[in-house]
Image 1 (cartoon, helix red, strand yellow):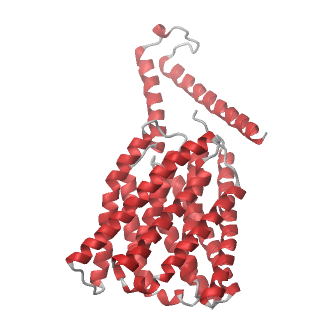
Image 2 (tube, each protein chain N blue to C red):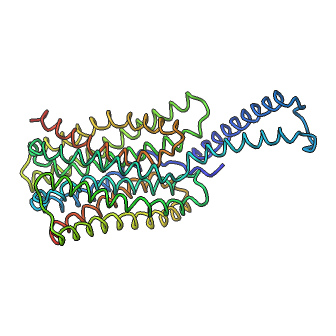
Length: 178
Length: 243
């Protein structure tokens, strides 16, 4: 029977949730500052909830697998391979659906804009997955030594990190890339 | 002291589970092969019985392994689900953006509340999936689920009060909106989203386990997608209610 680390309770979870929420609020303010440009660019507006949800998905999947006390000894290698397979599909999917809906709504895409947009989606999703994966491995190593359960801290923490990175990319995209 | 009691309880439940499994196996062996239970020399046990015993163990092992393995197909399906639902939701967002302008801080609180609800739901789902295997009786499993729901609700509502206060202050200072309006929006939207979303997530986690899939791979996109849309709809509905 693998070791089950104790959960620390409502108080700790509330504190982590609240702190993380303030950080996200800061990222939300940055997004507010580019609201006009964002609303004017239909593909970005459509991609925003999709990529935010995906960043959160990957953060949760990575944390849940690394934190699972019943996971096998080769589960991390399998997880890395699974991410390498699914990430390109996510990138292509977001690109396709946002450009399709934009085109239906009357927007036009030239080659330069298409390449920049594709590059932005790829860079944003890949950076989120890399940061979360490496960060979680390090955090798991540290928290296990202190007998703390990763689920109490890192699921929320990684979701916040993923959201902040993604909103940061969107802010940069609205200001600089497009 | 509490963790020692927890450890003792876990050991007790594990022993109970193992002993009931051994009893079942002994009954199965004695029924099929008519061998005395207390066989001490393995050479006297027929090969077919050992194979059956080995196969049974293999089935139990594979079932458990499947519940905790990495599912590439499930992750991909989850991403496709996200694309379709959020794509449709984006169209809905564009069509209803006027309702979001009723309360001036709606767009400020939305990403924060969506992240909060997704995190709370993800914690709830993983703790349900990882904890339920440690309890044997149905009563203890149901109590564990109720405790998880209660904890998730308390955490999200108390966090939303803090978020609402900060967002309200920003609204008053920067965006010239009412303090109480923003606070009410944040808290009521969170309560509404929790009461609808959390039972759905618990049910989804238990259902996915019955399909012998790992909920860790499947519920993540479900949570972020569902709570992104649900939080947005809750903010729109509460904004109209507060108007």
